[in-house]
Length: 545
Image (tube, rainbow, N blue to C red; front, side, top):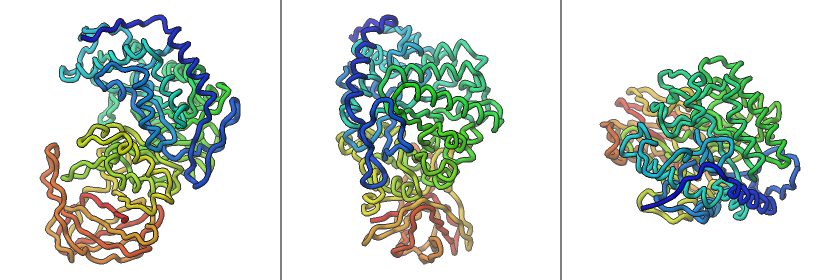
């Protein structure tokens, strides 16, 4: 039986160890990569002003509980190994997530996950379904056990320095997991003792009781954590993850809410600048400028004031393949980096099994190439680790190495890749709209938009249209831009749905051969015409080989 005595007081020894790690980290130069071929950051001197724009290609976001799901007694070496695997895969930045409502490292200003926990006391997990208690208990026990040996966050960031991957921190700005359970161990004392700061529930929000940023006490609660991190930890990038979860206000008072969040960002910038070293501030926001602004994120104002170094645009759920990078670029200008965020699931098509990005180098290349061609500075991978132990389990290099395939448009362009039509679970307030499924009536057509990258020399392009219907090849035709591609060359049987899929759809695939030079970099319009029968389009892949 495992045994650990949980100490909630004296962290002095731990923090002294963290300070040593920080000092060592400062002596190691940060290495970063540019999306533009041949550019690298010079080593940064303490106190130097931050670069006009971060030169990172791939940012990797590591969840706050991932390491603690192992089911074994963790050691500092396990933390280092976690970093080593990501660093070896080709990412430039590792964004270590130290919080939900609680901190997973020995914070002096925020409550920790293990505060008040006694081994074997299942009442600590009040309201948690029985089937989940063992996993939750493992998280808490592992965090407490590891904290007696090292500061998890300082160890991870120091190891990033050693492995020449930029150390970063990703803060979840309004996490509300277990929102339906008011007594959950995942809710902090600050949250439980201040119900007057809770957001009101509204249908479809997925955030029934987050914290309301209208209140200065709420904003100060988060600023206290940011101060601790800036003063005591060595990192190059701070991501404010406003997409876990995306609601911060009760009323849709756009201008006032934007002013509140902009003021908050301004304070964060002052804290980071006061640290005496350059730290890039890169908030993660909703997938369209309109959605971002409605939620309180005025990226144009942030750029105009020079208080952010970059932004990451993202869906809350699923991967968006058609976010308007070009419009974000117009708002923030050329000197603010714009990153496109990918979720672990590539798409969730009706009647077709889910596909996962880490399991397909071709889709990873397609995601990155399309956005880089559209003007993004790089990509951000979120929840990537969730596919780590899918069968068959791959080596760390095979799994994380897919990030290396996303670093450069020039390299991705000449390799096999798949671009995907956006189809995912979605949260209407912040996610891009799904383009499928959609039914095309007989003798009618439907227009789709895809962000693509033109093929390299000698490559062939196919468009695979997944559909449910009784079409023959001559019943479906395709146009891309101003080019008529003609009828499908063949019909294939599509993949069967998995056991979890309740859909009655049976997919087929119409194959179109796309001539050279038709696909352009950036946004492409695809028009599908159904000539004889009604056809339900389930998804589209554009395959470059």
